[in-house]
Image 1 (cartoon, rainbow, N blue to C red):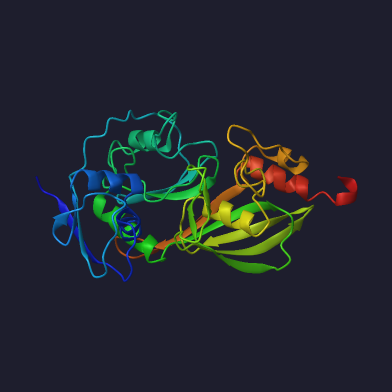
Image 2: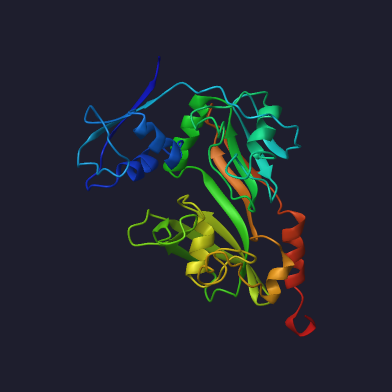
Length: 321
């Protein structure tokens, strides 16, 4: 069976194998790479790796054998999509809040992937795995905005390489609690899994590099509208970083408390959080060179109604609130 082979020279140091592969192969999720390791498809200096937690020796040569895409078992669903750009190679979708990007535990239907399978009639890249056809990068369920979808494997790979090389500009709008003292700033703090809450992320000494730039667009009533630019793309990066500097995203049920809630308990809502029932975060702008031909693609999408309503409410002067 034909396979695709990727070879990389390991940098200095001895990272975990799965962590190293995540940084080298951004088109593949960590779970997908761990599965390939278990199947013996990852070679370190010509020998099959035994476990995902094994250390990669300095100067090692890594080979990842990716099998041809399996036929997906996902059912296409006729769900309307807000498509901002489309050609034979890719499309850019404005995802609404509340829509899960790809199937997972408890979310098998109503996903963006199901809608894409219907719209594209199955013409989606397969290197991300059977559960994530076409998905180049993701947004959280309750984060709205623009994301790129690839229709062919070569396009997917080129877009993933561009993401890794930081050649795709992703800008967000966010309403945060409180007003930062400076008009702009950069947050450079590594992100990894939380020590006790494995579905959450945290600032950790041994985490992966994460850099976020922000600027204050508008001062609101006990809040602010920020424009945020990602330099890296870690899970929950904006939400973790803004909470880290003391200005959590409005409505964030996980990172908006200053510390994580106790297991099984829902965080209490503050007065401002009744303005929006989700994290007030929207991916409003994407800018990248088209992977076929190189033409500049610059797209914007206005935030959805709930975000705009919360923004308008917070513009009310404090003495009238």
